[in-house]
Image (cartoon, rainbow, N blue to C red; front, side):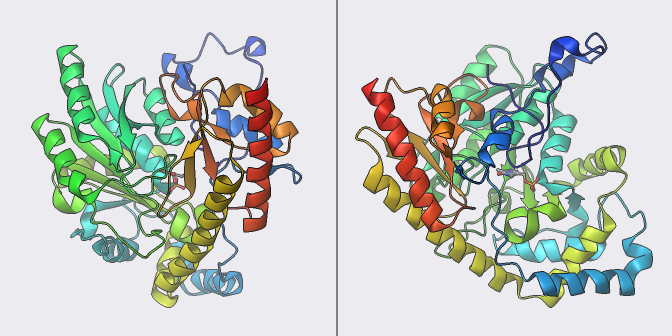
Length: 421
Ligand code: PMP
C-alpha cells in the first residue's frame, strides 16, 4: 500500500531516521503506522538539484508577486497594528479577514456568514481538523482516484479507510460514486464523507462537469454522506471561468476548504474552512487545541493585501503564468511523447496527469528519469490502494516554458528506452 506523509506534496524533504534504530519504536501510538514520508516528499532532495527539471512538486510560482510592496505592507502591519499583529488572537481567526474571505467566496456564488468561516494554517490544517472531527479508525472516506496526497496523508493518520472513486475527463463519475456508496453500505462500513477537488484537480488536472455537480450532491445527501469540497485552485481557470461551488448549492451538507496558497503566497500559510454552523463550533474547538490560534501577523498581512492591492489583477497575472506553462507542457507532450501515452487537458491549476503504455512502471522508472535529469511524481502516491503504477503527475507551475519543454523531451527519451527494454 502506498504510504503518505503529512506534509503534502510541497514540503521540502527531511532526513528520515532508519526505523530499526529508533529507540522509541514501542512507544508510538497505533495511528503513526500510517505516517511515513510521501513518495513525493522523499523525492524532493534529488529533484531540487538545479540540473534536474522538476515536474514533481506543486510549488506555486511566486515570480509575479510585488515583493517590495509586500515588504512595505508587512512593515506597515507591524507599525500600525503591532499590538494586535504580534499577539495571540482567537482560534476562529481575524474577523475582518473572515469578512473578506466571504467576498472572495461570493465569486463562486457562495453566500456565507463570516461567523461560519474558520481561519486555518493553510487548507492542509483544515483537512486535518475535518478528519479529526469526523473519522474514527476504520471509518471510510470516499475520495477521487487519484487524489491529493496530503489529504490521503491526513486520512491515513486518523486510520480512516480510503475508497477511491473513478474519474474521467469530466471529473468524478456519479454512477461510480453511487456504486461505491452502495457497496460500502453492504459491507457494513461507515462512510463519513466524500472528499472532492472539483476544480482543476490535483493531481488529475480535470474539472467536475457542471452537469454532474447536482448529481454528486444529491447522491451524497441520499446516502447521508457529508461532502468536503477542497478548492485551492478554483480561481485559477485559464479562461477566467469560475465555477459555482458545491457549497453554494448545498450549504447544509458541504464543508468547503479554501486557501491563499495558490492565489497569493503559500508560505504565508493562511487558509480557511467554511462549515455548517454546528460543525463550525467544533472546528473552532479543534483549532484551539491544535494551534491556539492561526498566526495573527499573517492574517493581518493577508487582510491588508486584500484591501490595498488589486488582488484580482494579481490572480489574473498568476493565471497568465500558469496558462503559458500549461500550453508549453501540452505542446511538448504532443511533440515528444511516444505512442500509447495519453494525458489530461487542464483548463486551470497546476497539473497534467499522464498515462503511459502497459509494461511501464512509473515508480520503478523514476530513478532512471532522475538520472536523465527529469523528475515527476509517480501515480501510486496518489492512491491509497496501490493503483497508479502506469500514471504520473507532471506539475507545470514552476519551471519556465523552456525548462518544461526540455523536461518533457528528457522524459520522453526515458520512456522510449523503457519501452525498448
Ligand atoms: N488541497 C489541495 C488539493 C492541494 O493541492 C493543496 C496544496 N498542494 C492543499 C490542499 C494544501 O494547501 P495549503 O495547506 O497550502 O493551503
